[in-house]
Amino acid sequence: MHSKKNISTDNTTMLEKSILNHYREQFGSDPEIIVRAPGRINLIGEHTDYNGGLVLPAAIDKAIWLAMGKRSDNLLKFSAYDLQDEFQGHVITLKKSEKGWPNYLLGVISELQKDGVEIEGVNVAFGGDIPIGAGLSSSAALESGMLSGLNQLFDLELKKMDIVKLAQRGENRFVGMNCGIMDMFASVMGRAESVVRIDCRSLEYEHFPFHTPDYTIVLCDSGVKHALVDSEYNTRRRECEEGVHLLQAVLPGIQTLRDVPLAALLENQARLPPVVFQRCKYVVEEIARVFAACDALKNNDLKELGDLMNQTSEGLRHGYEVTCAETDFLVDKATEQAAVIGARQVGGGFGGCTLNLVKASESNRFIENMQAEYQQRFGRSLVCHVVKLADGVEIMAA
Image (cartoon, rainbow, N blue to C red; front, side):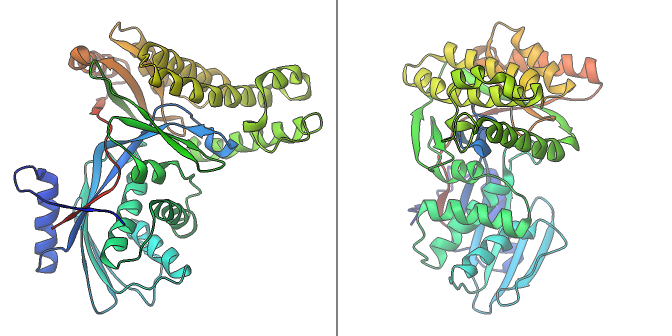
């Protein structure tokens, strides 16, 4: 069960107040609780999750806020503040909405019902400042926040890991997106000034310190969402699976690339088609980089962390081949600047954001330089976000 914090008018954010007031306008009463559910970044460990590997995400200080209250008539009433749109459904006759966005909320209720958990109706008003389509997992934040709120309202006694798994199931089965568990995990388990290393095979996790007053994280959003990402993502998965299948002839104990030592992969390079070898080599090396990054954080060695990020960037570009001209340009321009110690594309690929570790005193100059360079090269604006690592889902009394 999540602890509740009282909302203080003095430190309540403007966004939080807006959602609170929106709830009052929509439903004619005060909500019972307000939930803050953060988005996430992934520091290192890209495309390792579906290979049984490890990832290193963190919750960030951009979030979805949900104002929630119980109903006694089995109705579900949702109001999306940012979209200025409403939805009404019924707990007993739950079905997908053609609008799309309500399904992230309905999906977690559907999964609760499959587990035999009954809830009554609920009012929800929500909105946030997680940029949509930037790869910061606004959908996972919405699902994790909804479940955490229902857990509090209806005394469901769900543990944090239950919420993580239910949120993933809701997106996989109801929404229809075959995502991994990292996004929900980071949103629920996040901790300020920390990253969380998740073993995607065992679901064991450990927090590592990320106290970096001299450096800041700047995200540069290319604004590109290529149609390639879904088809190429599935292709990469198949190539990795093909590599494992071919290697099992000489390494019979392996199940995923997580089990393959780099030396064994190199020894058996001739057994794999060249492209499959490239994909496998990137993944095996990237899994090792997650462990190395955790060691660097424990030693407060940000230079080493930046070097590892740069290695990931090279691997994504030349080994896994999931970058695009815009993100390559952003990474190249970032690494030309002395204030930057690490830069790479984040997310599934072919667009989205780049993540940059930038000297804090130079962050404004960095952003100005990047925006000018991007405008000149591609003729469109570059949106940048400075983010801090934050706590996971929090519930507050309204």
